[in-house]
Amino acid sequence: MQTKLAKLGRSALVAFAMMGATSVFAEEVNLMKGVIPREGDDRMTTADQFKKPGPWKIGMSHFGLSNTWTIQMAHDAEFEAKNNPNITDFLFRNADLNQTKQVADIEDLIAQGVDAIIITPLTPTSADAGIKKAVAAGIPVIVHTGLTDTEDYTVDIQGGGNYFGRVMGDFLVKQLGGKGNIWVLRGVPSHPEDINRYQGLVDAIKGTDIKIVSEDYGTWEYDGGKKLCEAFYLSNPDVQGIWSSGADMARACVDVFNQYGAEMPPISGEGNNGFFKFWRDNKLTSIAPEYGPEQGAAGVRAAVALLEGKPLHKRYVYNPEPITAETRDTYIREDLSDAYWFPTALSEEKKQEYYGLKK
Image (cartoon, rainbow, N blue to C red; front, top):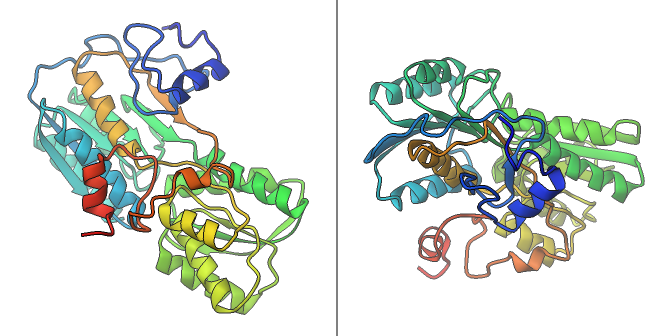
């Protein structure tokens, strides 16, 4: 099905999305600023395909509340659901980084008779069987924050992991002049987002003289990142750049270099309040690809749109421009904790409740 949007071209789509435009034709849905239909894929649901009168029961299978970002993404989803009067039940399931539990969680949500299911897969295959079973039962499935091996889902909303990793890799290539040693701090083993971000780095440094001298998984956590950076530094401190797949790990690396009184090399970051303060206060050379926890809210919005009978594209992409030193300070919130991420759908009241320093 060819839509007016599909005919516009990528640059126009990006412009509309970055302006927060809700529509260039009647049924277009604004899922999240910066989210646009994936270029080259015109598949869509049909109008009224999943339309159902409220009240609705919506389920969410989350791969695991393993760090501050995943917790806020869950908060964003819950906040969006709570503020929709047609959603009377929001059944949240935490797989706790356990593939077997995610399988069981999805089975449970299907058994509970939910009207739609939102899934953030732990691995490319952990949710496949559940997705197929839900869709076969007529339940629309929205996937985000992790790719799947199956395309049986109803709607897919993905922050481009490859793009994210490549932005950071291109930054290091430029800073290092195409040569030098780098450390690589990866996320959760086998997680689709980690795999894709890493591939973006590989693509960026291909053909250069940049060498990965130390690489391991820090599970996107501060403690995990600190252990890695301490081990890397003690093993081989000759490093000219650091590619970190997450802001908490990057912040931990800064602490390690400060601890040893060493000069901090260029390091990639992410849209996190704590990291941005570190970036500013330590005069770091950095860049921050955007990967907002508002994706949790976008998943709920997609579920609502389907249940309202609105057509959606099968695949959406979220590749916003990275945040640079020139724009960094406009995001910093001195009144909120280091655990706060952006962009977010949370109200100011909720931001203060979860992250306010004056409690």
